[in-house]
Image 1 (cartoon, rainbow, N blue to C red):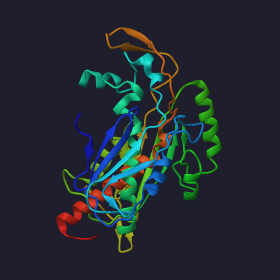
Image 2: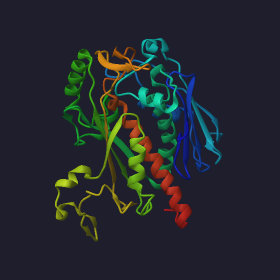
Image 3: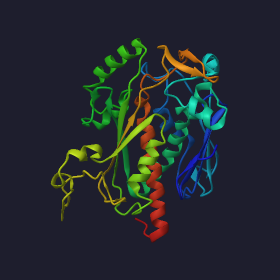
Image 4: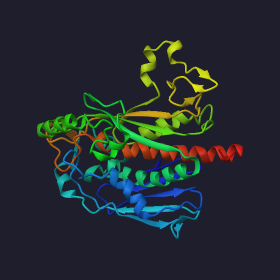
Length: 356
């Protein structure tokens, strides 16, 4: 299997499976001198962890992060940073009944068709468990961006099923509830909705927004290295992601040009429908990205499917699963935003010599 790496100067390669002994990543191109500890990285990883509320999978991993290389005396050395997280709470026996079956909505069928073999335990490499190490890598990128350029990255749950939480009413409460919801008044409604959904055995999708502030103008490249294209690619690489919008996104279809264009004055832009990116290059405005996540496909409600011999079978997925994967996606989209932006800062410096 190839394509386990992303980035240009800052390049991240991940490895491991959901029910293997460990997952990990190698971060190549990280500048030297950044103070970072395993505890700091683990704090970020724990934000996306399962088992923290009744609304997520009850798999409980310790999420202890081991720094194997690239850090000495709590500072990056400029050499590759290797991170490892052991899997401590996998229950492979939950998947014995589907090892010869393809779960609808999962990568089971497509992995089988591509490789002729698959790890059926929790989805193997296709499991969202892999995103824990993206968040670990993102912790390094977020701190570097914050210290180097004062870039601030923050995500939030913008919609869960039919319940919209687009408006940020209180940034302080985002990390104080299990949904990363920016409106404390909506949290009880989300709780009730998820309780009913969980009892029904069904699942639902969600949308997560992320904003990056204080991003300097000039990041990105005009044609094949567009910043918005690389952000969209990064977000779409996250498990269960099915749509990405930058700025106004699909709402621009109904807008008139006089509304959508972001007029400029000596005091700055008058709007930000472009989401902080023009012609693939950052404008200096806030970069705003929205990612849609599909409903979880692992359900205890029976459905029709096929086995590896092509026979139609009834499929019931057992085990511990998120009724809404988007609930835990906020730290992941934040991490992917940070990794792409840091990569493009380093690319910009390499191309122009500008320290921005």
